[in-house]
Amino acid sequence: MAEVSSPLEGVRVLDLGRHQAGPRCAQVLARLGAEVIKVERLGGEETRTHGPFANGQSAYFVQYNSGKKSLCIDMRKEGSREIIEGLIKKSDIFLQNFRPGTIEKMGYGWETLKTLNPRIIMVNVSAYGQFGPYKDKIGYDPVGQAVSGVMMVTGNEGMPPIRAGVPIIDRTTAIHAAIGALAALRERDISGKGQTIDVCLADTGYSYTEIPVTAYVGGAGEPRRGDGVQPAPNGAYQCKDGWILLSTGDQHQWPRVCNALGRPEWMEDDRFTERHRRIENASTINDAVNDMHAKMTIKEAVDHWTKSDVTAAPVNSIAQAADDPHPWERRAMVEVPDPIAGSIYVSGDFWHFSRTPAVVGSTPMPGEHTDEVLSDLLDFSQDKLDELRAAEVIG
Image 1 (cartoon, rainbow, N blue to C red):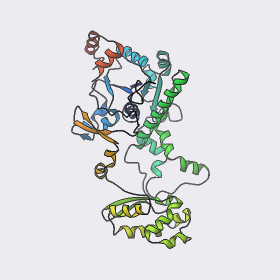
Image 2 (cartoon, rainbow, N blue to C red):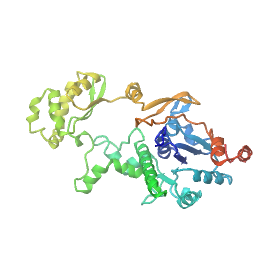
Image 3 (cartoon, rainbow, N blue to C red):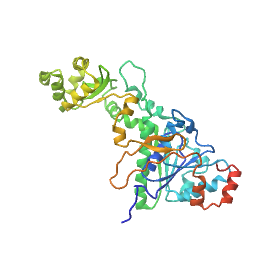
Image 4 (cartoon, helix red, strand yellow):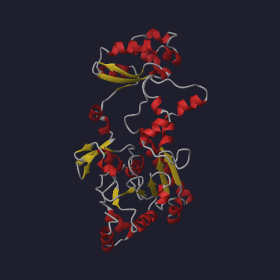
């Protein structure tokens, strides 16, 4: 059997993605060992200038593009077509997240791709999908949170709509796209044929609200916002020096909660013995929790609940999350060399393969690999590279 150094060794991805969901999919594939060629406009993708910054480097851009090769090209110039078509023929996956219809106008729709390379897998990422009632609309992460109802089940009753403070829709859409690409690679091993994949931000939003949507369609009515949706104690509770999270929705945790609160008699109290009753009487339970926490630090409270085998965790600020040992010991964040910052931390290994580890690379400078890609993959001579550069086709 052949030995490989990473799970996707030998897989090549042509990444025309911009901003987050598309590039993040390609970055996941790069972490798994694929060679990812990021196609950027001359001077680099605009998100290279997006903050926040770490020692002069965009913390935004590195999280979506570290570990890739950069090819800078003006796709509007006549000489670009030979390059893109040549790379399509040499690639396994073609990823794009332009507005639906744009890639066809550029001349690289599915009919063209499969003619150039019948084995290629085309990954399409968009706001509302390549078909559907809103396919022509553009959008970013918040639209997925908005249209699916996520913003109206977040927070408590009476609050305005609330969106998550991080791009959960973009990140999950990227994962959906990566999973689809991997499945298509597997299917291609059997059929020998490529195919298209269509993932979108709106679909991802509905993957988060699938339970309340199903319940509503089934006649359950609109869900209530806030902690009352789950039996108390559930949610964030304040201690002397900050907040902790408690999550005790499972029925088997209720006796543990009673013991931790010093209220063993509540195990037999009709007000609390069933989930729906603990929702109805949440204020009584929460008052007891708050009274106890008023005398405790975060650490003391987490330790107290943990000893009773109740789910509890500190609610960290970003500074506290960064100081926590978990992401560093688990390599969820990894330090890599960086051409601008010197070194920088990027998202790392989320899989921990036993034999073929994830590949965490540095962020390329704009066009850093242009000559390498074109000479190694397309056999362009130095004279031809000089000619293309003089015509401002490549950077």
